[in-house]
Image 1 (tube, rainbow, N blue to C red):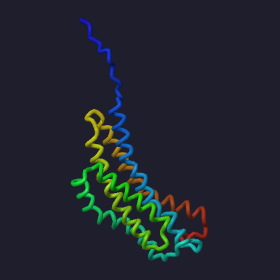
Image 2 (tube, rainbow, N blue to C red):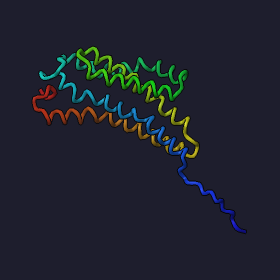
Image 3 (cartoon, rainbow, N blue to C red):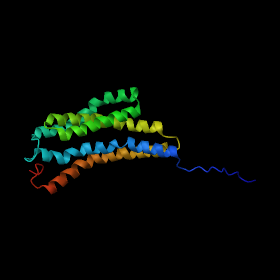
Image 4 (cartoon, one colour):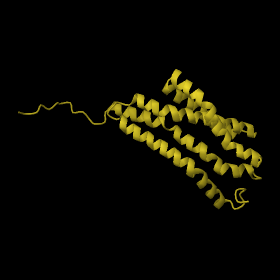
Length: 187
């Protein structure tokens, strides 16, 4: 008649779940770098076109800053497919983080626009690889009982990236224009 109670009551969130959540969050941290990469050109193009810039560029060169990012993503797609299949998802994420770190290190050390183009190209490749490998990695590591949570979390990552692409340029341009009335954007 009575129900047997197990002395070992199990917490709904055990150590394995916490480790999986930590892995999922760190696997998606590259979304922050990706957002900064896309938004970086907003405030930097007016600076690079200005007279006080450490690196003088033309408007034509400034237009290529965003293009190199997209070219890197397109050209990087075969490398992404190869790495995800041959290296695995986790190693692909680690490789993508190395590429993105390298791209961010190149920017402040650049004394020529060509180096920034290389950095943008690498950012496109690394962001593309992270965007493909992160959901696959998370789906592989997640237990069945929390996989739905991770899918929702990844959906948030996709929506966040979409909103970032739409609004980051607009907000950066408005802020730069309000901050510096002599910005090349307003002239």
